[in-house]
Image (cartoon, rainbow, N blue to C red):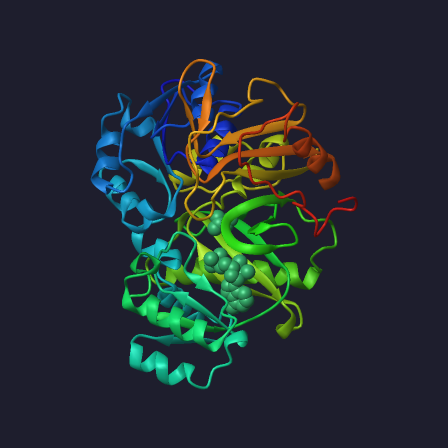
Length: 452
Ligand code: AMP
Ligand code: GLY
């Protein structure tokens, strides 16, 4: 649109999916600026919008504000979209709004839903939102006393603050439970996330669902009509260590959730948005609800976690599905940042499924190997979109691995089996994408695929 610009904060696979969906808008901005490097986002430059990288350390809120202010654009026509949680928890959206800039992303107070699990627990208690039974423990003495009689396999330990996805532990033994609790509270392990306290939660079982809500900070909100599931474990059969996510898919099959469960989800969303308004900290941006249909609650949805951003890799399936069904993602960011959440009725009813497979580096989720040459990126693969996470271009022909989760291959199809077939056809040598030491799960979608 004439004179419109967008600054996208972040440069991982999620932001790759955000950028691609913006490029696919009916009326994209003239220029998309983004922080850091991303080979995939760079590759969008020949579309109807320009793409420019700005150097900015997103850990530094002032750096983000400076980057936004340096954009040569009518400030009213600039929209800032913040992808990751850390800058939001650190107050990036507040500072930008303070400069009169339109932002898609919650204030620091609202981002506490992700930034502090103690806060989120108290909020859910006050607003009668279903969550697992939780004890908040703020000191080592308190923890030792409480855990003395706890059964390790019936509880979950959670560090209060942001821990880059590592702050949740399901202990197997008493020794592990005690050690993890102490490590969390010491503030030395888990990125210091347990320093202010830990949660001991009742361990629940049941299917998990990721739900994304877009809220405009003025009471308006829409539930994105594509629910997702991800695979957090490294190995097939959902075994091995936890990761940032080895794959995801959307939507869930018809009938996967009962009408009662759907109503329960709507109720949780409404209470959350209203509860934040009542506190005087209205929510603006994406609210991600990690829900479990808990067997211990007759299958009713329970909030396992709130996040203040899109999921990664859930964005890599939800956003292309929105585009495919005529929901304009740039319009969603633009309007929501200006206080008006768009209605989320799909404009077209193409339906379809998306499934993404993460290509991870050797050594991930520990210390990933870098520098492997990636083959197969110069081919085109039908019904797929490829998003870059940890990659680096070293010359015109060569792209190498440069992080843990290297690439995401999203397949699209009429159903999840077709989507999986499209994604997997693009993965693995000699005809697909591969690099030395590549770790890929062969069974993404197994919970809902008919032919896995
Ligand atoms: P998170 O790092 O918050 O995404 O949590 C990681 C995973 O831990 C979740 O996706 C769940 O599978 C599991 N989890 C978290 N809380 C509980 C709980 N109270 N009961 C059972 N599993 C849980
Ligand atoms: N895929 C899980 C997350 O983004 O937290």
